Length: 257
Image (cartoon, rainbow, N blue to C red; front, side):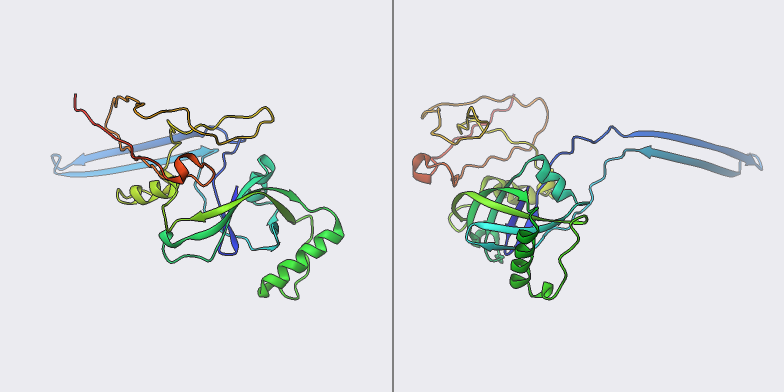
């Protein structure tokens, strides 16, 4: 998925179904010599390790430029890049259009969900490229990239709302802020558990956000079998009008056993 902020798309992470388990083979040999009544020692060790299909975290280019006409956006990605692979896997993208804030708590943006697809008609490709050159001065006068190397995409916004972090951060942003206090980053965020939000899957496969099924006084009991770092976020959700976008307090009790 791609998330644009401040005129460009930021990448997000998507799993790769073609990943294979890593396999390693290693050879090691050496010797140890002692002489002079063990007063002197010579040690030598040789080792060699080969690994196949190793999974590495590689930094992708973080942004790509875009242009828009109303709620229709166009952008360019390369066929060899991970962004296109992500979109082919799932064409849904999230969009937050805003100036780059100096602080995350200052972010105000138009937030939207969209479906992205490749622009194949040549006339439409030329028009999309013209829009990109008009918005990004560094592209002025450049030739349209070969379609065998680059793909022009169109994103049509389906849902539009306002995102205002001056009132409250989102759940993921809360996690990032708290984990930073423990020397961790968003890469360390694992899949979260949401106990009280109601997100059913509709017959057509779409997700819906509806009023929660929980009621005041409902609770969940968890048992930690080992030391854990637990981050809890209770904040408004832009698509969930529950409680008038004002979440009620959550009480947390911890017992030592």
